[in-house]
Image 1 (cartoon, rainbow, N blue to C red):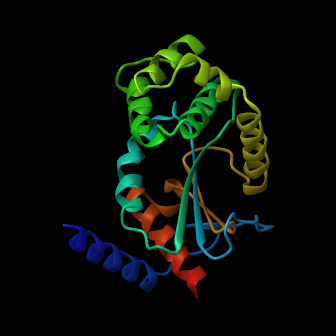
Image 2 (image 1 turned 180 degrees about the vertical axis):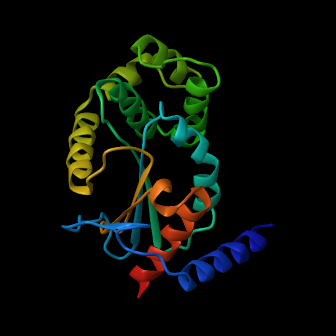
Image 3 (image 1 turned 45 degrees about the vertical axis):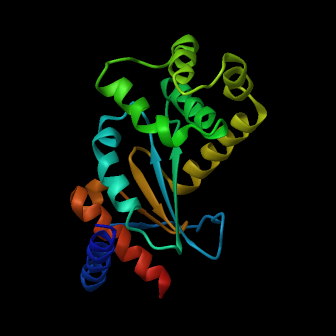
Length: 203
């Protein structure tokens, strides 16, 4: 099964490379490139919000695409804060990352909001959620408003401004290109454009 997924991914990238995607229509080039974390890799960043229904619906496709990427691609998901109600969810993401439970809790957090209809903004509710993954109240308190989380929030705000993001989900390829499902022409085309831009960066 893994070799089949790899073969399909390679074919998808080749197909995307053969297509013509138009700058200013299917994707947008940033006026000022943003420095990436690792210059030796091609960085792909998804800005998302747990409360966003579009992000929730896209997540399975993100997972499928993530499983197909090559070793030279560095994929990161970053919780955006474009409104006050978004901040608790961003803090929850960084709590999960800091305590090592992000992989187990990520989809479950989406599900709690969109399937179980929980708002997940009160600290008591968040503590109860993370307790299911072995995170103690002391650990939660340490990270929820800790220095590292505050730094992450400030860094994310700076990156959002530099990326020119006004909505989510949005993807940034190698600090140079911005694309979303609307500009790409749909969910399937979104990943074709991302793959195209990855190939473009490979030269």
